[in-house]
Length: 286
Image 1 (tube, rainbow, N blue to C red):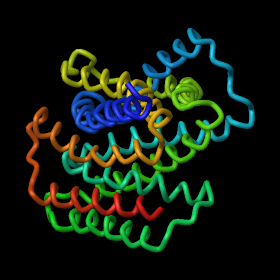
Image 2: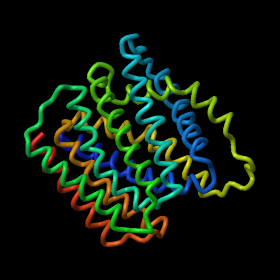
Image 3: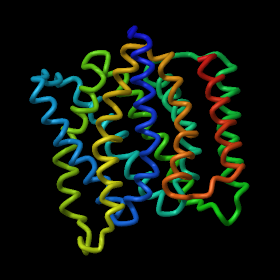
């Protein structure tokens, strides 16, 4: 298999894995508090990452990289998981997945801030259309929508975009999977302490589905997905493979409908389609 094709396949596997994150989180918060779920998934993934780094004898990051690793950890290890878990107490995973269509745009915006890029004016036009589609969808659902849940999802996308942009910059020196692994290891002591501070009140009352949700977001969403995703970016190129992330809202809506039997209204599909198209054109003129 050619490197470009191999990169596309690896990237697609990563996107499919990430697409299950919000449905799995939705299941997880049915048995765990958002704080414990966030801490536990990071602890499990952090232990696995530490073992992986030790087995492969990876060189420790330089002191100058620690600040960037901390920002990456705050974005993708702590911020996004915690904010989405809190949001999913107020909205369905199908509703929240619409916002994932804005993640490539958020990453691009922070790429401008952190990397000094200057996109063409049409980039901002299409990015505005995509943002308007999300806001319009949120407002059009009336009582079915939780403002708290929507605001939490917006915050989650912002911090995740920052974490992606910072991690992407850092991966040029450390390597893709190494960045997420070191970010997990760096956050491990804090997340372990949080897990002990906010344990479930009754372990026996936690349903099996919640344990499965925790297992998925810990092993696949926090670690395995990033390994495939960054491998795809390295082999197939960031511009080409990065477009696969635009499929994530559609895959997430499908999983929410099939696994959680959540209703997927035509307005959700329309809003997601508008976001995906808008972000695709925005990235074209970036």
